[in-house]
Image (cartoon, rainbow, N blue to C red):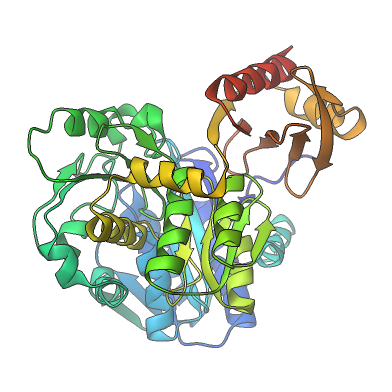
Length: 466
């Protein structure tokens, strides 16, 4: 059986505009998703939001009309906003959930739809499977009703909520040089509005083509941020930040304009929240998260749980018990006392708080942490576009004949929580996994030297393409 046209990945349905992501398909998905939201949760209305992508407002109108036709009230955003703003709006307004038109960090030719539940986070895999099954069976609900439409500014309540999480006055008074690359996404002007003062904001204009790059905060896409930091001539401590297209993911840069992934930022945040703020709770990480996250959590007396890749799995834990921080390698981080959702702007506020309170560069603090817990971490990821037919071949090879040696080192542990993770005798690890939202093979590796990381990734690339 061929894969359905509409398939939900790690966080929502993504598709190429005018190919699978059409007005008619959006209408169908909105109808079924709203029906399942109404069957699953208690609340009033569905929040409908959208990002800055090509045709996003028009797709949002299609969603709004579909939901209204089921007799369900719609709370429609009057402007683009971060995805966590819509998740917060669900909680604030007691809605059934949210339908957000966004393809997050995907290339410009993609759009997508994220489904948020009444709890203010991504719905479960069981929920999206039910949506897929009804779509595949062409089980669309009746559309003979009408309902109320309310417009709202999604930024107002969201920014007010974020201001309660940190001491905004202290951050405003801190003498920091703040650089933030919003990558032409919906995070534009958000940090300046929160702090009530100007920041060095890069690529803030509305550009549906994202300047020719995917709005994903990875090192290869952040040259403008690195350049701006390296050419800064002031003397204030520097904090570099980057948000993805829908501002739910974050990355950073140190005072020298060097890239800081969430493999670096998450251990810093765990340490800050536990040690300086005195907070407790479980730390939840995905299988692609750095081992340093666990080391720091244990050093602060915190429990750790590991999940499959995708923030919806972290959100599930957050709903069951107190979670200090839940984070994923790709940049999504959620926090205690907020919503079970990743939030780029809240992550940015906490990172600013770290530098404001310590006066130290983020890289210096990261080095100090590694020294304290006795663990050096180097990490990288490669994304490969494979030829047609390779996916099934590789899946069969991984299932039936997984490697027992990688780059000359014996494999001591092979887990399949999500993709295939191989741990070697000296502690380094490699993950081979297909993306849930794009036709890509992702290779992840952590080791105790950069040379080892590149050796492992080169081996994996040769294995996958050979």
